[in-house]
Length: 342
Ligand code: A3P
Image 1 (spheres, rainbow, N blue to C red):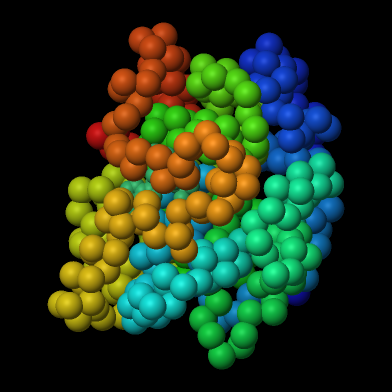
Image 2 (cartoon, rainbow, N blue to C red):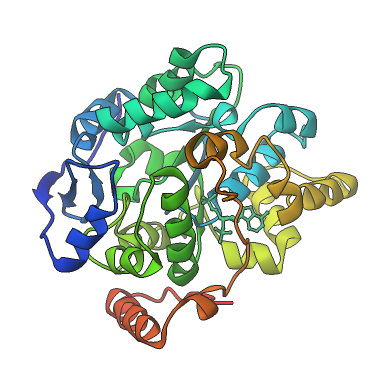
């Protein structure tokens, strides 16, 4: 059993920005709710799932990758998985990320409606067993529990630190990856258009993102600051997307040291090449090609979209820049966290 914090859940105030955002979000006709405290935005089915998360039993050698969505989670997962598994690229390329990591809370974000849509879309993916495939998402805690005991269990989560079992936060090896919110919002809009049939433009998504409602896993700052504030614990490694862009080898070494691993010179070179954007973009085990085809067939859209830092400069209007600056300032008032925006 795990020890979890307790939360209340409240309705999200229906501002114009939220109403517009939700009018473009067909997967969630029942809307979202948010946690108190924290303001974590989740589908209405989440609290029941969260209560069940107490059944989750942490293991001593679990390795976690945590983030707010679109921070470079997949990139980090690929790096971490290969470091843990002594650069077994053969297995890394033959098993998808969804098979190599348990995604802890997906059972709590698959509403009945989303389950139905996912089933319909994924039925065309040529899977041997659709039910078993769906179970990975629907029964995510059970998926984690069923992990072979003789293997390091790899877990992905987008939950804020307050929502993780207390034992995990205190003891488990957690690699947290952050990315500046200006690039995250563009990437998250692309993601929602790909996988959630979001029909709104960037501007409507932006308004939702910086509001008190908006896409699943908001608020961004609740997530990032929670991990930033515990970054000095010896079981936490806080890295950034921007640092990976600038000095990938340096981050790889830091992660290896954190996981008590050593990369040989040739492993380091191979892993460095394996983690380049073009290599990841063409790697079927990580590029979500099958899912994109199932959900956004014929649109030419990509999960690995641009893979750059600083793209927000071309994307945002002067008005959006001044609004996001004010929003960041408000949330960082009492924090020493600083983002890299390039
Ligand atoms: P963009 O949408 O800006 O292109 P997540 O895995 O958390 O969903 O994050 C996805 C983002 O990470 C996408 O950003 C994707 O392109 C980027 N990404 C994935 N692999 C990358 C790599 N090897 N180099 C740079 N960016 C990468």
